[in-house]
Length: 161
Image (cartoon, rainbow, N blue to C red; front, side):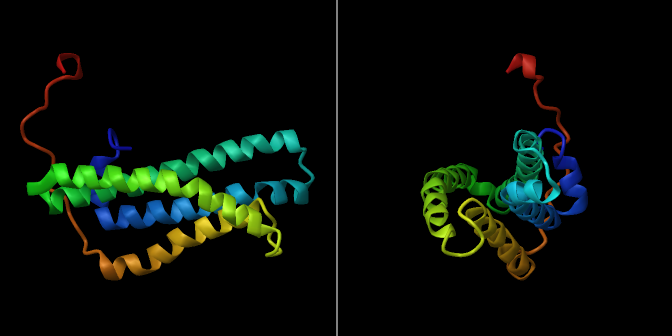
């Protein structure tokens, strides 16, 4: 998304792109977790469900990439004098999320049978609810940030880097 989507994100507005990306992530996270139940409901063979897992995972990741790229653009624009600190902070937060996510998902999986939603679906239900909640408060907390138009000077071609 950062190679092709940044000009679209500038036109649409960065906060709007974060909202769309978060909603997309929430919807497809929910659908990913619900795939076994949906497949069983419509009588789909278990080996055919892998295609739904693949599609929902890809589309959810695309939404997450839109939201993440928009957030990075907003942070880099707002704190352009401290881009190194911003980049380090983003990397730290992403790393912490990657470390904390699997154990939290495992705990929710263990608790899922007690909820009535099922062990597999419960972590996805919770992790889909979080972006929806964030999306609800985002317009109140994040000002609309319009990144400046692209640089007038051309960057070096990739072959020269």
